Length: 216
Image (cartoon, rainbow, N blue to C red; front, side, top):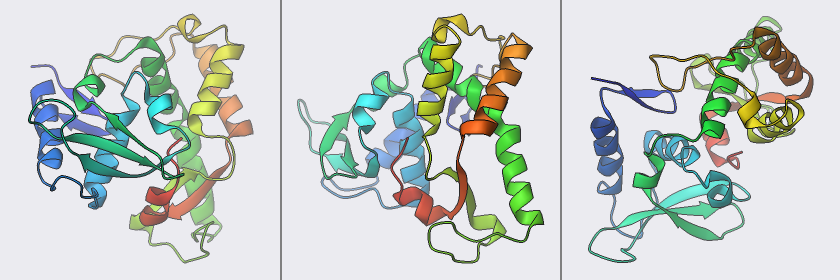
């Protein structure tokens, strides 16, 4: 049976992923905020899978809430943006097959993982494991590498794709692990890694600080 991924979380099937999301939806009362970290992170990754993710996310995600039914008897999810505005989204729409742009973005994250790991390793070696937001000393088990002050990952990916001739110009390898494909052109992959090294402004935050940041 094919596996299914939401962000880094892997499920034995699409049905199992859908049930995990429904557990979050019905684990809170209508009108309440999704306040458990693991549930919030799941919904962030889920929302990234929406075909209109950029529009739904807007200026950034502050929180998620359980919205009353728009039509029919079932509640839904609502994004609370960092500017206070709200918009609903369908979790079923998020679980549709990813667009090619989404597949390329996922591959870009895979290709850039070495850069992110190298950044964390360098900070640890320099004994500078402190939050770049609060200055707090970080616990190595509660440390997130974040696109904190510079362009978001989505902005970096879009700019590189435009320079490469558009999303469709970036050919990917096939993968038995959905969302873990790579660039077929390895020279282009190195160009992307170099672009990421040059333009990504990374930082270290605690998990809670990272959660409060705008998504994107």
